[in-house]
Image (tube, rainbow, N blue to C red; front, side, top):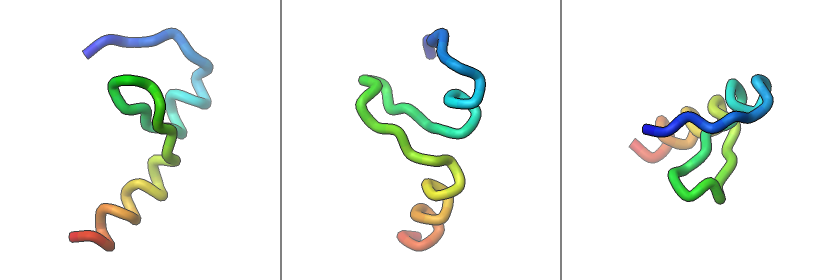
Length: 37
């Protein structure tokens, strides 16, 4: 897994998929996962 240089707040708050096109707030992502499963 590669690390990318980016603002700390962005890396902390957002999850980025491997190709870097999707940014989702971690809390919202967790909520979505819980609702789906």
